[in-house]
Amino acid sequence: MTPASKGARPMNRIAIASVGALGVAVVLTGAVLFSTGAGNAAGATTPPTGVAAVPKPPTPEEAFKTECGACHMAYPPGLLPVRSWLAIMGDLGNHFGENASLDEATATAIADYLFANAADTSGTGSGILRGLKASDVPLRITDTPWWQRQHTEVPDSAFARANVKSKSNCLACHGDGSGDN
Picture 1: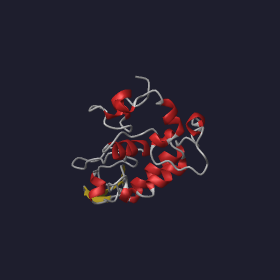
Picture 2 (picture 1 turned 30 degrees about the vertical axis):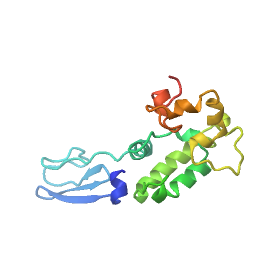
Picture 3 (picture 1 turned 180 degrees about the vertical axis):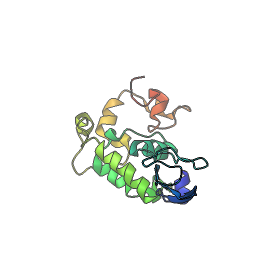
């Protein structure tokens, strides 16, 4: 369960703080801008003493890895087509039996990342899509013909091992999830 699923917080925050005689600092999603004023040169990018800079917001890929990876492996987006990611992101309130709801900005950023890197948009998914009908919307990578072809020689008993537990635990056998281990 991620912090965002416990209660969505807005991503965009604006804070205005008085800085010296006439200077005002405005902080908006990680960008710190300073007005000219006593002790501030035009275009200054270093916050005056006592004003902390706000960290840069995460990239869509970082948000994906943080939010999705908080509960399970952040599966590579290229393992499913856009239609599958659309279905998954469209029902985060019931994400495989869990509430994985996110605030709108985070969900949109993650969805955009998934769609841009999906098997049918990234330019690398021809093998992934082989055998998958245009009407098929697999919600699990293990339901794709590609995954099933890759694992034909793996006995069901291997997935039942205590250190593996299920077909979705890629890291148990592949370490980093790349399949190169």
